[in-house]
Length: 95
Image: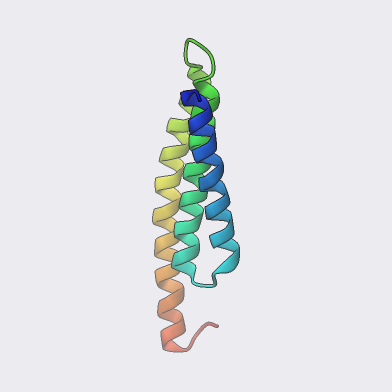
């Protein structure tokens, strides 16, 4: 078993676990964590594809780095939105 195949298998497991959790829970924070797991799986999948060739593909590596930055920004914005929605719910202003 090569390292690329191992990364692909772990990536598929992360994608499957994140997608299943995202579809099965109603809690917004749990969905955010599930989306982060799903995103990590997709980034690991891209890394496994980049590592297939002898010189690592720099384009896919750059996509992974960009994806990490976008994931951090998305998580921060989503956490703030979840906090505001939950605050409105406690006040009785939103469903």
